[in-house]
Image (cartoon, rainbow, N blue to C red; front, top):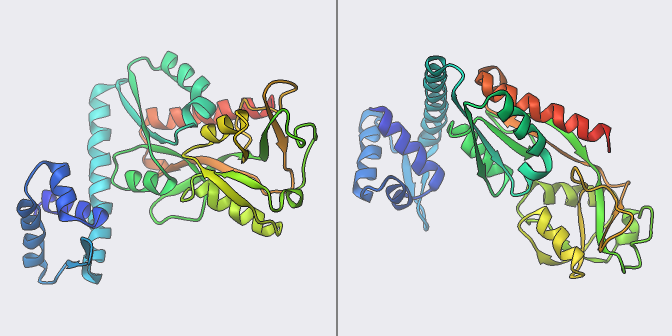
Length: 300
């Protein structure tokens, strides 16, 4: 049993496909299969079972996957910390974000951090969902992830940083644009631009609406909050979105943002594997973003 065997096995469990892992590793499917077979010989149990589409871990496979993923992540983190000790103030901080995160939540923090630590590389990866961020954190390919805070996830620590109230984005000519606020119940039956259906923010909005006894009909589905705002500005629909930093309700312009105060705010913040295991640069970058968000909130 080798470390490579375990890495490949964990990758297969997550991908649910031998061929997908083979493509990622640029090797044959047979080579991937040999890693799994070697583990099965040494453990004496079947670790994968074939499904109509791909493969899935057996009960024994899930036990090994959980232990292997935890061990590999810890080892990778330790090796990286050792490299950073040798490199001194150089190194990198790897961050997962959504499509709108850096501009709205981190722009000032990135500038401040780079001035303070010019030799530390900041690497950003756009992920499609909080779930994808958690998976990347779990295999130690990331240090930090900016997420919509949700239900607890095994092996992941979540720390809320900001509470974002909901606003209705409408074109200035819309009858609701002149309102100082609107109740969620007044939106009953309106057709809205839908947030990414599988996102944590969409699930949070659905839950907040259910608490208020409100149901919406949806038209266009978009990939991110900025796209929803753009479509609303173009007059192609109304969008219920979080009030992002820098998007105060304007006094003029084509886009108006009308507060919906009775919907439970959306919580956003950091996710990591373990705060006490973060490298010093990663911890300082996380703190810099938190401080920047607090300044923004204080001036809102």
